[in-house]
Image (cartoon, rainbow, N blue to C red):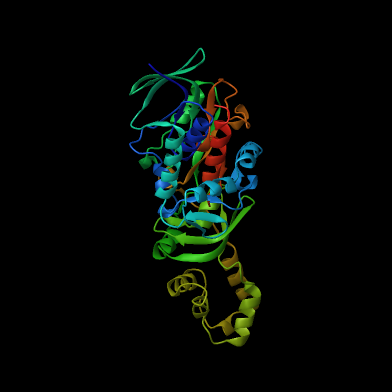
Length: 394
């Protein structure tokens, strides 16, 4: 039987990070994954450019039922620690916006960097290896795998969540947690587009599919994000929509300010004064695409020359554009979600070591835990930070 110090399940961002740092401590580390390639989600992330961290990472960028849990790990391994690693490997990068750091070339630069670090640290990586059974034994854990029996002192679960099942995502980590007595909080898709089924709204979204509005405020349940939105043939997407989806629950309304950079009541009154004969749709075409302006004027407003609008009617136009309320039918689900909300209850895991409080020698890191970051590199930073923290103790 193959026996080693540490076995890590999942060769994604968290697993690769934990493996290299545990090996640097002199631990014998075996990294297993059921897929045929390591880091598949790294490769497709950020549109193939990998948004590997965010310059402004802080605990407030994360959702969890246990808000304080993430603080310790984020403080011990910061975004600047990861940037230092990127610089060490001469990986060119840039800030896109809002502190989001992306590779200049492609995501494979980050994956290759992690694999080199693992290789140089002496990590053994085995792919195409599935886990059939895990047993707690004296001094550690015994695993029945497709490659035969294995044993270790410390077992690390870095198998991720349920998002993007086409890349091999499963609920395996949650099953392991339940097997050893852990509470798993309800999971749902996060950072995910909304679907719209209400006929008139669906027609509007369908007509505008592919149209982006660059600067919008999207609000729900006391949270607000300012970014662009994108109309799709199924509903709404874009960064602001993905962000707010993590705070939305079925049946909730969302509110969209399509023009937060303009004081609409004042601006419309000024335009009415300066250009009384201009039609509303012509005016809107200066703010949106011509097609969108025409559709909004047709579906929302009675487009006529500005001089024909009363003060109350102009106020109503301003309110509709600044506070468009709609109730999404749902989300596109795990198929397109970037992350999984919910997961293993962190109140049963040490925030210092990431060791289970139910089963000594068992560790959980990354997305499998009930910690979810905002869009913009925060989920990768959680993977790096939680992995580094656990690697000091496994």
